[in-house]
Amino acid sequence: MENYNGFDYDNGALERKAALSAQMARVFGWMFIGLLVTGLTALYAASSEVMLRMLYSGRFTFFGFLILELVFVWFISRRALDLEYGAAAAAFIMYSVLNGITLSVIFLAYTSSSIYLTFFMTAAFFGFMCVYGLVTKTDLTSLGSILLMGLVGLIIVSIVNIFLRSSSFDWIVSIIGVAIFLGLTAYDSQKIKEISVYYTGTEKERNIAIVGALTMYLDFVNLFLYILRILGRRK
Image (cartoon, rainbow, N blue to C red; front, top):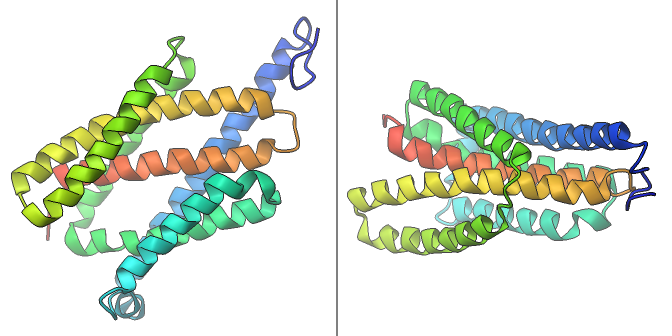
């Protein structure tokens, strides 16, 4: 008896497990590459007068980069399966660079020590929730739906607070943001694992790895930023 990808259910359990493990390693490998590219780009941009002048040369330059990032996220999420693997990977790397440029602002606002401490704390929380999402037998689909609705609400109240400029409200929003992205980390890791089961062994498995890497990358970065807003020490 064979499954969707042609593995034998009776004799291919080890092969399926090894193939899925390789696919998940590919997902998190690309996520790590994306974070590394983003971190190095942010460090360079924050220390380069040329980059800082370019980024803040005009009133809308910074927002232009943010809009371009959103375009790349939409493009990779929607079109990655239709692209050649190299093109999908290149788009992900380009997005990581763009995000690094915009995130360089945190090195101007926060001390380096608090940024590094927050990064390692984020990595620990993120890793724990990823492992939970991958090994738990509980179906997190319903939790994911609730968290996605919470994310929409979080975005709305964050926009409102731009005008209110309430520090106490911002602190509450940040705590809620941490809770939401911790949950989304577990949910997304489980979802990516389930999707990978269907694509592992097919010609699109590497493209799915790029999509999965982008999802986990976004969870990590957003979790990092919310923790930084709570614990970060401003200059």
